[in-house]
Length: 541
Ligand code: GLN
Image (cartoon, rainbow, N blue to C red; front, side, top):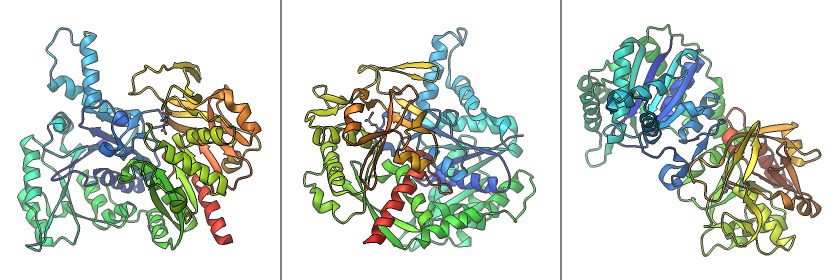
């Protein structure tokens, strides 16, 4: 029988509901329960794919090709369970579904309303897969009080009414702000947020209070009384040095015990949390450094590269090295490549869209190629490796991507059709921007004798994709003749998945996004290999 845990947030946004939900999931997993996490986002975009990374941070891609909130990345990294398109929804998507059902005449002439029609669809989303798990943990995005989130909150209320309080637990994550002039943490915003929740029929069962300092027990008691919650279910959620400490901190504050006893389940305090201790001590044990320049364009907002930062962290923990990421804005007019890059050990060119900052990235690639600095290009990074090579080695001066100009030698171009297993997929320059990319898992074959094959130690790989443009296969021969080898290619021989430069310590570009698959407990082999090269080179000096 599946039990439901709903996580809402109050007072301010960015309190870390995602980390809260996954940390609870990790503890329940450690108790031997099967869990599934879902995210309900209130905004009206159908998915975050077309949203600016400044607005929304990274777009995470699931193996089944859904462009999703970055919290799904945490779900995978903390639980090691692949998220799917059935685990993420936005108000835009659910309204789209509702309207399309209405247009098909599915409501038989009835008046279509938020309650019950929209809330029924939300219920279907929440319940999908309930027979396979013991706990369904659902995070409601945004902050209580947001208009867009009301149908979600109403649905939670309905589910609790239908299944009974013994099967549903509501967690409210709030902030106790510190007021310096009074030298006090304040509980009033939490009380107001709970009042707001109650006004729509939801009584939280457990409150987690975020604070930047120790919370006196008297304040916790005050919240318990004001919000009608037992004392032991008002729980301290102090800021932690790393998100990987949160499951341990929750354990210390008995969250798992409170949840299991709430549901009438037996609690054992002998769970094994070794892997969390291992990660935590791994992060603090990293003393030596290597420096990696990330040449990108969202440098002031590093949430835009969340999985990338995580993948470097995971590889660093493995080797007990701190990977210092140096953010270089490739669009900076004062961008002096030699000045910025001469102290770094390796360069990463991450994925991206649009023409801004492209030439700066190409300059960094040229510098790495000529000076034998290890270089790792991801997605757009691989495409720019190809453009730089065509321009400066093959002498094709107008080499470019048709993403940036139609008037060029199209080394990177739109593939108008290809085969994905049995299915034929088609694209045109006029296709909609939303959801028209090569998305999610694709298989490719590693080239015999390539460095990338040596790294993976496999014949075939499956990696996640998120891009519209591809390496133009007509250039393959010229590239290979000049020393840029195709390291991996689709089974039909059309889609180039990796390029690597012969005679260079580490110069690999991949068309896919390996960072989505890196886990703290199993770092990605490409990141491991790249970081290992940096460390070995450093030791040499
Ligand atoms: N803009 C490029 C494309 O659409 C690369 C995308 C990416 O780096 N994720 O093909």
